[in-house]
Image 1 (cartoon, helix red, strand yellow):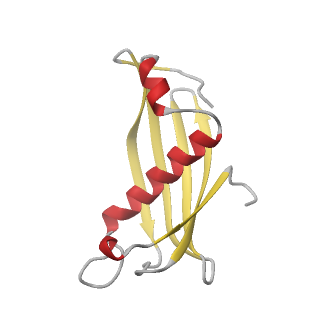
Image 2 (cartoon, rainbow, N blue to C red):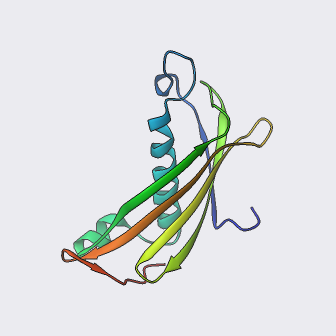
Amino acid sequence: MDQFHHELPMKVRDYECDLQGIVNNANYQHYLEHARHEFLLSRGISFARLHSEGIDAVVSAITMRFKLPLKSGDEFVVRTRYVHDKFKYIFHQDIYRRSDMRLAVRAQVDTVCVVNGQLSEVDIL
């Protein structure tokens, strides 16, 4: 896992594919988000608890580079690392096809924390 803080194995389901037989691009965002949530839970951080405390972590920008399409039944792993930069948590996430560990997607997801409706510097990790 080297520089990554978390790794989550997953598998492509049939309904996530489009007519071309490959994962529809929008589903990669679901994979990335699920992996970020699981990473936070592994650190004892719950979105529900944060929200009840008036803290909402929200996505402010996403950049995804598609390298290799995944297909139905493909097993893959989402690797996640983050950098905290004052107001932002920047998540770097890679998706690798498990059969050959080739990179399928490289993403950067910028998130910010809104506290009681106001952009705030919050240290949650």
